[in-house]
Image (cartoon, rainbow, N blue to C red; front, side, top):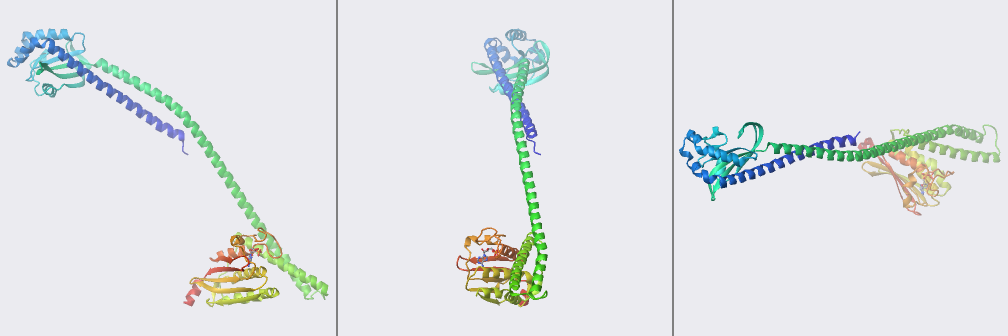
Length: 480
Ligand code: ADP
């Protein structure tokens, strides 16, 4: 499960640590840069002071120093004088060492006497200063020879500064400024900055944490609510499916079980009609005829219900056998012609362009035809009913039933194929003429045969129902 708080904690902690480190480093870098600039300015100012106050007295000595050997130089009385003057000038400052070079790079003077006479002519800092550029660097020294002797563990800013006299570079001054206390101050400030930033970010983190935790709780709650709704929907769906299954089972059981006693009633009625239980008078015959018609209707009704229930449950298995198409028409005429005659309707049947034999379930095809023609007779008062079997295209054959009856409004064309639906009652209206299952069963049977059923009709213009079915491979190849 996605944990918002965990995600927030990890990312924000990482972000805060990075921000703190960047700020700390950034601050230190800025402060040290400032320190170097400041140190350099101080060193330049000091050099200027030196040039103004001491240079006039020592210029000659510095200029002629190249003529002396290092030993002679070290023993010159000017050196002692210079040292005393320099020490007086540097008193109270943080300067720890001073050197003076002539333009040849010779160390003419150093507060560390051992360095007097050394050659610095190739030193980058010296060369830079001799060309007029101040060169400054900050270094850490583990040990350092200062005025007062060896000092340890110091941070020192050293600058090579040109000595200018009347605008001309006359020599180079090297100044070492001890900035250890300043660096300690920077470190302390840096620590305070980090502590301050950490505190601020900590407070920010705490505020955000409570906001995120609140949001996380809302999300968790919503998720549980979503899950609860899903569970409820799943339960409702399962219950609905169970109820549907139960209904279908009852429908199937009732229609199946009802057919047996109805068949028995029909049989006994026929035996009575055939005088097997003795002679019947006219009144009794009329009553028996009525019983016979009603029980036939009842049997048809339950057979239709059973079909619908079995189709719904996917329990109808079609036969796959060879049959002669024209036989369908013969059987149809035998069973329904009397009904058409009774309403004085002409019943025309024809089969054209079909193979001699087709494959399929002839009983179910007969059922489809019978239902369509039965409807046509039912909804037609006068005129003709045409039944045709024909080849609809290369791969399909079709059966169509047309009538000159009341017709069906186009907006009803889809709904009439729904179970228990009739145009006039709009919903189920059980009557002797039907329950609204015929077309639903036809549609399901046609689809089971990989075919389809369609209707063409207008109100008052009659109707044509067409069932299109695939030709079986055998028959097609027989023909070709
Ligand atoms: P039933 O015929 O039992 O009512 P069907 O499913 O066979 O049920 O038909 C559904 C409805 O479609 C019928 O009630 C009728 O309104 C309409 N219908 C079907 N066939 C025709 C037809 N040939 N002419 C006009 N209406 C029809």
